[in-house]
Length: 141
Image (tube, rainbow, N blue to C red):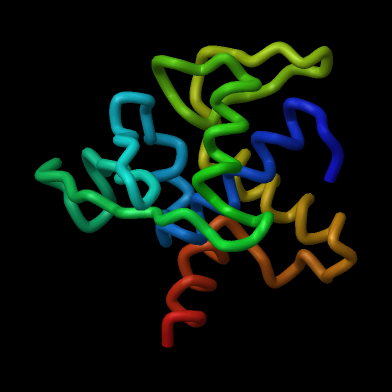
């Protein structure tokens, strides 16, 4: 991956998605106010999810990693470089490096995962936005 703003987003998105076991719709819904910095990393509040239709919410801890693939650092870099301090965390990035104010769509998360898998020289066909969540479950098992 390069050092562009889009690369910063596309580094943070799958790392946070995998570390938190998030669905693609949950990643799209994370807002700056949902991220709390703590000594061990961050706590992300999901206000609503597929299994929480009443919106009771739940908190997901994402700890600092021990390698260059730290999800917390990747998120901090994306937020800093994108100058994101309010609103949706994961947003569209234009061709000329403009960061839009609206959140990515779940379909965009799917496409980003596929593009990153292909760029790593793996077959993207079996991968989807759900691969982040199922990958964590498989690794945990």
